[in-house]
Length: 262
Image (cartoon, rainbow, N blue to C red):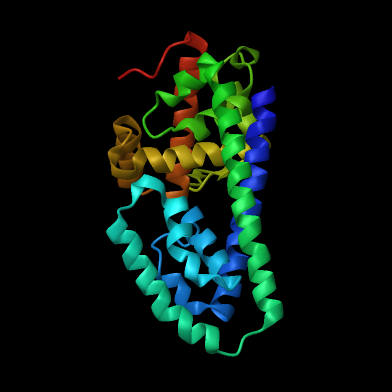
């Protein structure tokens, strides 16, 4: 399935992007630490382009760079306030002793982040186009707490739901079926899942559970979560049980070809 290739590529590039952000932040702390307080989102295109402009010694062009990247979403007052803030930290920084090698490395990381943002945006657009062609994605997305990316990942990893005779087969395929350890009259309360199947699908399901139970976005799932916690089940065991429950719901709507019942 082409959607599977694209969602996996998205996962791969996103993981690299996260590492690049950490690397860039570590370099920034050494090269230009006062810059991190200028923008609320240090990794926005505006913040990165403005930083790149300052590192290249073109601080006098800040207003133009900010205006070009922020577009119409920001007022002239906000842009001017940012320029004044930048001017107040740039002058002392420009006169301080700096490592040329570190500045060059930071410039490279900023360029890499900007490039990766464009790449991720292009991949996500490709995901949207492919997902729009599959009604199954829309069915899964109808589940409260499941957004575009999670729905695409779940559907692409499951494939054709008709290959599974029942929900238990799908649960086993994912690796969410528990292995129960018992001795005499004692049955363990902390069941371990087999983890045989798709690690990507399990991760997507766990994220969907977390999104669903947060703020009672998915009331049915939240009620099930609360019930298990009231029974004394540990958090991790409860989340696994919720993922299992959610997978049963997903199987049902894919088999019936209908959205999640309201």
